[in-house]
Image 1 (tube, rainbow, N blue to C red):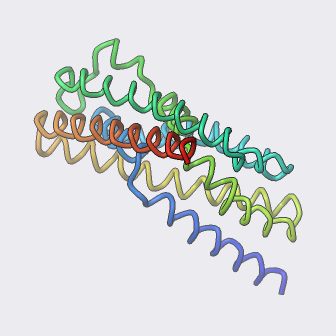
Image 2 (cartoon, rainbow, N blue to C red):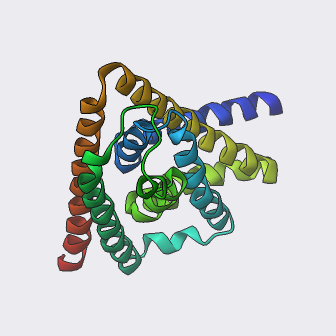
Length: 214
């Protein structure tokens, strides 16, 4: 019976995780853009994302997650996150002409923009990522209590693996699609992804301002 319960719990974690992972957003946009340079970029984006996500899960497990539901905290996260996304989106639009043919090494300036750092920054900049963990994610962590610390570990690893596999798939798809269609497609991906980040930037800031004004 215990084994059946754990399997049921893992299935729940995977289904709920995929509902968030498969939703297009800033991480998807940056993964596709970084994937134009390397098929492995998605793995590093996921590792950067995990560097933020694992400590956050631990904080929620120990009861700190309720802070993210406090209105001033949500507003601050929304505005700061929106500004970070705006900065990243504008940078991507500026860089689209510098995109090299797929498989070639980018220039040193491009190399410095690590997919790992992008994954970390996007996690910090996305208020809905933090709010999701403070609500739906906290509920999942609550379910893990019945299996003790092992349950929390299973939850953390399964959730992150969903991120890792999906983002790795996206970057590989972007890279090999770019190799087939050429540099113009890579540049188009950069423009679309840059505009996507700017859109989410405005969305986050507007929602934060609306929270303040009522």
